[in-house]
Image (cartoon, rainbow, N blue to C red):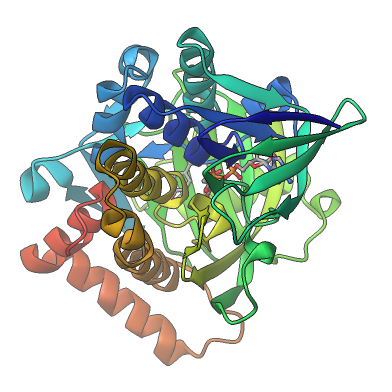
Length: 392
Ligand code: APR
Ligand code: PHB
């Protein structure tokens, strides 16, 4: 077994692990990232692409924003479509902020390049499995890489290892879990076509939710609500386009621009939170601690918000020896997590067709959408959450 050591051992090279490692580096703190997948796999996994104002500002501040600013698209609003009509939520007018459309895997590429260029250590193909010395001041992570057993000893272990990771199961059984599974999924497509809209379109329709998003001037991202148990084989390209046309059409004949499908996949939708997000020298951040349904695209943004709080706590500890900011990590991070959880569930419940919902519930959805789009106070409340201005 080969042994090594660092100050902070990070499991997972997703947005949480990469941003944390770089924030620590900027504070002069050493870390090592263990990532079970290859660099190519990590850099090519298709995920969401909406960056909140605060995420954009952080990426710029840490030196990871150059390509995002060149290639990403700033959006100052979003469209809500229901009852055959389109309403715009103006982020600028209501919050003075905007969002950035820039795919998560592009953020990942930029962060990996930055980490490596600044001397960071990322072990790809390194799968963490068990821990030792969790009750001591020097916990260690056992991991396999290229068939060899290794041990990384550190001061703190951070699980940025996603929902299926190994750090959360190492917490004591008394931790609390809050979970909700939605009775629908999203079928997502990547299509080779010019943008259909200058801003995202969230559409409510009797046949179910649809979303028009974008990736670049030549590649678009669209989603439609489906049964989470559907087989992709049931969704021919023709069927996908027919549904998108029906769910998105407006009285003035607007249609999404079609093209060659580059990728299609089905994602289930669920909410999950574990409390607390820390135990002794173990911490959780990002999807390892919480999952949100994708309506509102908060996953990446929450991961980045978590590690900002954690990095501040770790920096204070290494600077002064004070542990109280670190002790407050979970409580601070969970406040935002629950606000984002509420927003994501609110968006989900307004737009999706609930199987077997009665007409009364459907009318309530339309009433709520009407209120959000017509009352300046309600519009502002939604816009604040969308751009990431959560309350205390
Ligand atoms: N050892 C090493 N790496 C692991 C292990 C393990 N045992 N288990 C999981 N990982 C790695 C995964 O391969 C993955 O690359 O941890 C990483 C976790 O990254 P993400 O799933 O991207 O999670 P996170 O960084 O929290 O990012 C937030 O929220 O809604 C989503 O799309 C959003 O992916 C984003 C996520
Ligand atoms: C995306 O572009 O992938 C996306 C956009 C908005 C969402 C979810 C996903 O709410």
